Image (cartoon, rainbow, N blue to C red; front, side, top):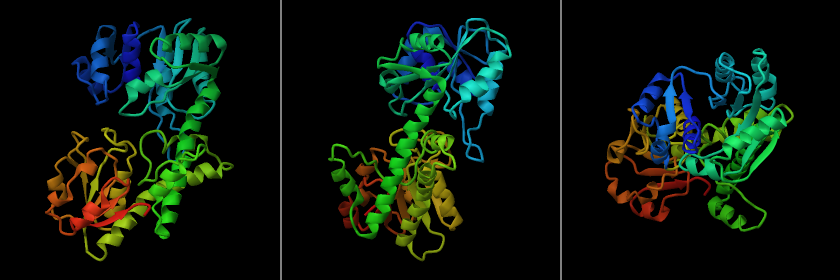
Length: 395
């Protein structure tokens, strides 16, 4: 989220300098090349260019916004090394009156218990706040401007100053609170979604046993004015939902933990569906349709496809990855005819909008014609008529 935030602020009239330790990313931006694809980002980059620059050297500034990653550690806690490194760098250039904003997703209390003590070592008078960022790949620029924002300050002055800055590009309401509440809100949002998805996955597995179409049942149940069931799927990907609930969960939150376990179990369940179609063939070739964790984007962070690939290989299956949205990864094929050659089973993982348009009659080079649809995207009757054995998750 660092680059879109920087560009939105630059477009809003601020002079913004982006700092990163990734020299390749810095060189790309200096050559006016974006390091990733996102709808509207190219236009925003051009509009903000006169006020935006990048550097490998962190220089003194009036405002520092920290957007470093916070991956999951081995013990399921928040890995703090990137934040600690960033705060240490800011500490060395901090001046009286500066504002420091943390946007990275963290455990509740991080801003006051970890960030503030480090900055206090400078004995400077500074402002400090936490901003809960929220935007989805494929619609990031729009959501960063139109989603409600939660800003938490260590004091009222910090919160108000941060709001004043973000109001230059956030068009929806901005809500002020304390830092710990703001940190918690981000975790609550993604924990809610994770728990809801886990319920949908449990429903899908249960209804499949009874030959009930879970997709149809969920669709009809959602007509109830107070019901909002999510969709089942092959697992949860991205950098938020599979990770954030762990930052909030503890021994006294069994529902949160169990939801993570359920969603993490779905890749193995999906492989089981494929095995039921392939049956006894030795070393079958399986093609995973989709590597992105979400439809119509090129973001493969925490994608269930990689977990499914690993499980298949443990079962001595040969796996090919196909995704026309993933560029520059030699492991991922972008030509469907090459991916399906002599294959025994297709597993549709990602809900790319192009996948329902695949003509099953055009796939003539498979050894066995099997397909598992984990997103309820294909026309099952059409694929069956083309000679495929079809298994849809949740049916």
